[in-house]
Each structure stands twice: as structure tokens, then as C-alpha cells.
Image (cartoon, rainbow, N blue to C red; front, side, top):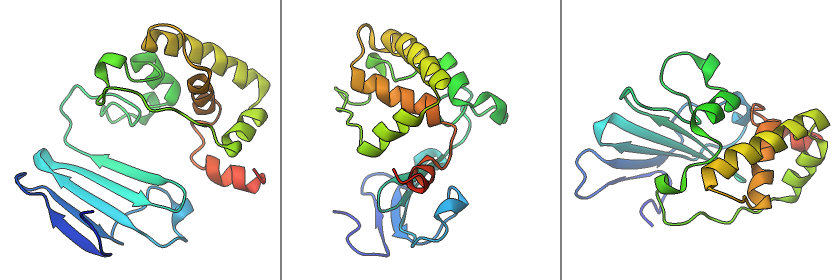
Length: 178
């Protein structure tokens, strides 16, 4: 472990300008988590790439900041300054629902397991939205994965389509007693 104490910092050997800091400093991703104690990891990398990881009890938020290189697109947007084309649906249209096998950083995909909460959320997805999710996910993922798609990955995609635009899906699930 590199950051054994809180707060602490670490300079990455052999990588000029690369540091990792663990403290309470930083801007939250959204106000929904403002009431909780902050545990924030700041990673500064060469070329002015910054990663901020906000650690919570049951999930993490992260923020990636970098200069626009002109050819970026993905779940966080396309750097054109217009949030109107950064919706889940439009990103899927441009890039597909999942990373292509040839573009994976690691040699394999990890198994996806759905929690009971996720299963219950899928149960309350509006029927019309769920049908849309099934159609879109099957088309997008069969193309992205080159054939048959495991059911567990399809259901994960359904959740994205049903609730992907809901910034506070976890809070909503808690309020619903899920």
C-alpha cells in the first residue's frame, strides 16, 4: 500500500511530476454526498492529467481532468463544450454500449454481478423504458462484443438505459426501501 495514512502523499518514482495525495480537500461531484466525511485521492500525472477519486462507503465517484486533444469521446463527453450531446443515448450511438474487445486495457472482462438492489431497480423500470433498453442493449452489445451477449451484461446495460441519467439512483433506491 502506498498511501497508508490519512492524510498522506506519495511521489511516483520514475514518473516526473506524478504524485498521489490522500486527504479531505476537493470539490464534490454533487451535493448529495456533502453530508459525509471526505476521503479524496488526487492523482497528478504528466501532461496535466488529473484524476480525483472520492471514496465513499459503498461506491466511488471520480473526476478526470485533462487538456482537450481533439479526438476524445466517451461516457464523460466529447470535449466540445456542449453537454447536450453527452447523454447516455448519444454516447452509445457514437461509441457503442461497451468498450470493443480490441480496445480493452486488460486481457479480459470481469464478471458482472447484480446486487439485490439493482435487481429491484430493474423490476421498477417503466415497461416502455425497459423494452427500449432491451432493444438498444441487444443491438449495441452484440455489435460491440461480436456475437451473443451474456444475460448479466445485458441487464447491466438495461440499468444504464433505465436509470443512467438519474444522478442519484442510489439515493432513490434507498428512499424506495430497496
